[in-house]
Length: 404
Ligand SMILES: [Zn+2]
Image (cartoon, rainbow, N blue to C red; front, side, top):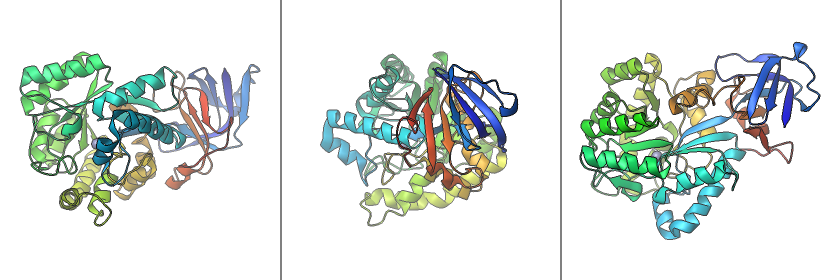
């Protein structure tokens, strides 16, 4: 089916400006043409949608989610209580909540039982509605490493190689590794600054994933672990709390992206009395100031910054991307930069910029039509008139518009 959006105020996901009076033609799952309304042919076989100057932009990408997690104060305990089948159904509902809010792609970087890989498949086969899901499934960790509940313990180069191949065989769209300890992962025996997988192990993971065309995301909070991950050729550094200037320069040189997940650490640090485990609150409090400084450094040095929420984690429900975008803006990213972090820059960091992240001929027809102008007011992203995913209207047209 063809759809012709008439007279859009178009932000294509790339620059800082929008263009008025533009038409966007969709043919099936893809964008067929983008052209000025004044010179746009009628396309008699297309459904016409007159936007009357409404804002049109690419669908949003959340680069760091956990679809199986509930967004409650302690989601690990919820998975333990629910078990596999109920957790799978929760993941479907979470994916649909993401899509209804305008998030047309998520990268899921950790799920028990490889559930997010199964969900990615179910969505791509049309069994259930949802955003595109790029999923790691289980993660590559050292024995006793971060997030053991969904980790595959891998010690030494051979074990890491086997772990990465296991996930490729399972159908992973990205490989996730744990380079350091974390904040919420384990009640005891885990420290933010402690390096976990070694440089050699990280390099094996990156080399093997790249050989099969997959990108690698590293959970890395401490300085040495970040340095090892960057040097090993990891594609995106998740959280990246204690970044040094030297490593920041190396990230800039290599084009390594940073997924700072600003919101989740603030949420946990402010989580006294909110039911979040006390050990996590205490660790997050120690991280927040350094984290702000790392984002500032990344911004100043021109490191690619992408928007990831850790949605599903402590008190951070699906969806939370708008709150991460506004958090990035509060960290100093201009609005257009913060929006690129959730569109074109995110697609680049996914290795999917040929198909996602911008409004251009040949790209996937993942589009939002918004009342208002997010380049002037980010909160306008709540005012969704249409959400289109691979050429299909998932919000608006066939039903009522819903809000984030
Ligand atoms: Zn996470």
